[in-house]
Amino acid sequence: MKISINKIKSIAGIVVLTLLFSACNNNKQADEKTSETKAEEQHEEGPSNIATLTAEQIKTVGIQLGAVEHKELTATIKANGNLRVPNNYKANATSLYGGVIKTLKVQIGDYVRKGQVIATIANPQFIQLQEEYLSTASKMTFADQEYRRQKELFEGNAGAKKNLQNAEAELNNLRTRRASLQQQIQLMGINPGSVSNNNLKSALVVTSPLNGTVSNVFATIGSYVDVSSPVIEVVDNSSLHLDLQVFEKDLPQVKVGQIIHFTLTNNPTTEYDAMVFSIGSSFENESKTIAVHCRVNGNKNGLIDGMNITGIVSLNKVTTPAVPNDAIVNADGKYYVFVQTDKEAEEHHQEGEEAHEHKEGEETEHKNGMNFEKVEVLKGVSDMGYTAVTFVNEIPADAKIVVKGAFFVNAKLSNTGGHEH
Image (cartoon, rainbow, N blue to C red; front, side, top):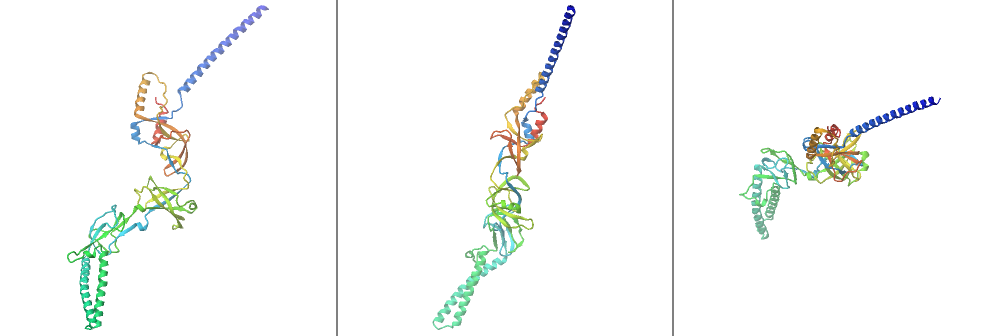
């Protein structure tokens, strides 16, 4: 019986040892698998947020950098309108007398000053008018002498009162005629004091009525013009104002003194500023809009009477960080911008000569190129080509962001998957 028990104990010990050995082998294999899994996880790292572009790529794509700006994009009203020049700053240069255009000294686009000669008109009647003026002056001299003689005769009881009255009436008529001719000659632009038998002018000048730019030329050399035929049109664009068409529901929010940001409808790249100085009191035609008159401030280059504009009425002066719309990219349902950085993309372990050569190529590329970090932002309101943004993680105040070509940078980052093999 003792021998059987010992055998049983021996067998049980062997079974226990076998189980322990098997368990150790299983643990060792599990540890190896865990190590392999960890190694694979470490090798398959998540994509990097750093994209590297060479100088050649930046130039080819046309990538541009800029700073985060501050724009008044909140609490605004969008409206369309036109640029207008008040009628008292537009004028037609005309001649008070008919004649043939002899010379034309300006063309469309020229800047002219008030009183500047823009054309000359010739007409034989001009000479006749000056001739009559000189003749009337001579007749006046004779009539004055006759009046004095008749007065002396009448006072000496040697002449009739009727002759004195006739002489006085003739002298007054000539004085009136001479004054009329003098005014007409002055309106022709000729100094009556300079008119003489040796200085009769056959042409008169047409001058600009105000300072401004020639917007239209109606006459040509050799054409006939009169008082109803303008020679040129002059517009003073420095007096441009903006007429915004605001709907009835938005009118209570518009006040005198508010700032307007506007762009040209056909060229929205440049932004201009204006300030409300008057609000209309009647509807414009049947559009159910009211004209809001604004004075254009600052830069007026490129603005012309009649241009269509798109304006934003700022209802408050709260500013927010904003970037151009093209600077924002959408990836995986989130929004990002690319910030220029000195950080390098994560390097992955590679073995052999191929890894060495690849590393040298990367160093050359980084040296001649530029790195951009993908930074997440939250979008706000979009207006005037800009979008308000809030950065999830703070960036330096002087950071440069990609304002043009961000789509290409994002594509480059996506194609490389964060690293290159």
